[in-house]
Image (cartoon, rainbow, N blue to C red; front, side, top):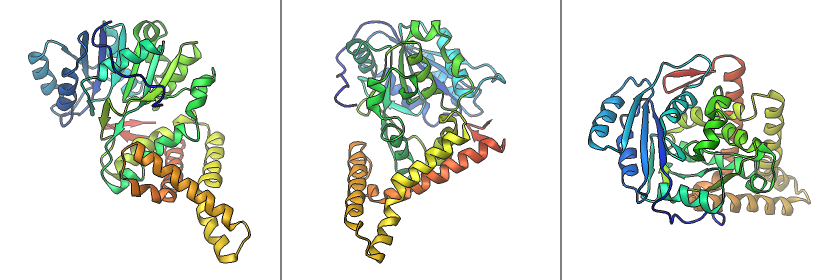
Length: 348
């Protein structure tokens, strides 16, 4: 990711529309908007949709819009039955956007002054139609550190990034909804979020959809441009990431089962197997020690690269146990019809 990523050099150019859905974000939205108002790129607008909040989000938005002409605020429609909340909010916002480039970002993100310049620069130099990537993650509690890094498994084991670059197959394209930049004409003429309106992993499915139409999608390193505390605490992290796991596999129980077996056999099994080999004096103990050391080093480098407390990487077996639990929880909540409560809405 880092080798492909270009520096943020553009300070002017096409109009950029930054689109932010906000539902019950009174604690975070002002900091997000202040960071977006402090950009070195000149030609941009900020559009925020209050997605039927029950707190003081709208009052904050109205005040900030009255103080800054760059901000435009919209009241979201009641959620339609055939849509999920976030894609519906973003679809509404996109209808008001005037920019040639659309940047979708979350209300809990904090942007460096070069955040918009980064998108324009990378889309221009890489000739990309769609750009996303991993932003910086602020993880504080033990539970967050045992949960949030699991999303990096996506691009290291399930959908390796080199396949995203080398393969034309849309299944190898991915995105993170905390920061997505897409050309407006590409997005709008193909229906926008309409194609993924009933997906909890709408960001990933949007990337796949755009790539399936023949456009160039890129997954890059955005950690120096945008950061956020994705989830506060273990339960919130499990619910936030867990609701997407079964959906990521298109709610196919067989595919999820195969993935779970693969995670158990190739990623988790070497650790307990090592103890068994040590006790029984198995001749393959040394190769297995090497495998466990390599696993530890791999996660150690990832934690250091992502600026997560490094010694938590030594607990990688707990990460995988947690992943198996979350996969089972995601499957059960979906097939049982209980769904997931997120932002005070039930998502099935």
